[in-house]
Image (cartoon, rainbow, N blue to C red; front, top):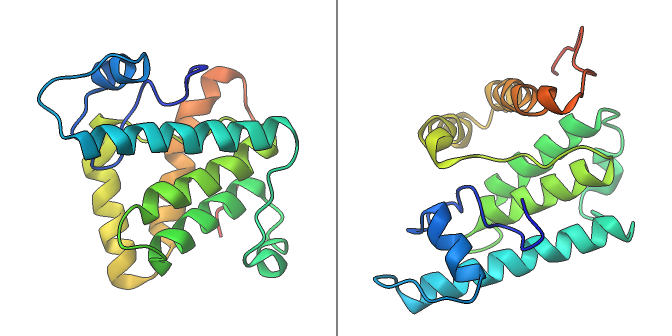
Length: 168
């Protein structure tokens, strides 16, 4: 993540490569892509910058399901549950996982943790886990997978709170 927001990483179904996203966010058009796809990248970037602003100003708040979710003490588990819930409920015709990931990352960043990122290289495994979650509505595999993925990502930043941790 950079000051511009989403100049790197996978955008969930977008046909842009990370270098093309970076170019687009720098204000330069990228040939061969639909205008609607470019507009979606700009909207996703604006959404990410909004979440970062809310977190920075300590104004990020997740209100839906707050009573139930506040019973989950572990902030990473709470964030991942919000992600799975938002992905499953299908509030919108499209973009539910992207929206749920923004909520998840807002919760993580509000607690001082880095955001959860899914790279293009990891997309196939991620989609397979999510498909099994949609089919079974059992969050166990997804939660364990997210913990393992997230732990591997953030350990090099000095986060070591994962020792002796049990999921669910």
